[in-house]
Image (cartoon, rainbow, N blue to C red; front, side):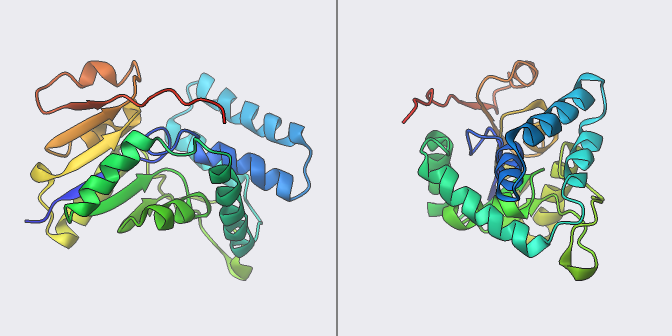
Length: 224
């Protein structure tokens, strides 16, 4: 049976949180002042601090794009990636090196993230990943985002997506690997034979003590 390597993106492959980094870029590209981003970020942080489930906070994020042209947003995503990558320290090189090794070994490489295509398509293309699994906000008439999102690819949804891919591609999850940096990645990490914790998330750490677990400790990024 074939093997796969599943990679979370934000905090695992990238040093930046793509959703927020892109939101700031998108608002500026549409002519909003900087405080528009700070207000939006404060609102979303407020949801988390009040105990709103992560999935609902994710849906609130995508409501910020309601009414926007999807093709234009995709174009902004490509411009954002070019600019962000050009500033340096975009990727966590240790995880990218692991990605390259899995790809060279012929394993199916899968990016799996709660972020969405405008952020993730350029990353997928740059890395040459085989499959992208991500949140996909609804697009309505006129190719505009409706603001609705059925299923954020977070937590158990990541594990469900990986299970579906395993059935579709005849993958052995027991012989597969997954990389994640956050407690919300735990359902995916627990699904595979070789789970890899990236970084030092204190919530995730207590769950990563078994012999099957591997650790990846990225070097601290330095300003360029």
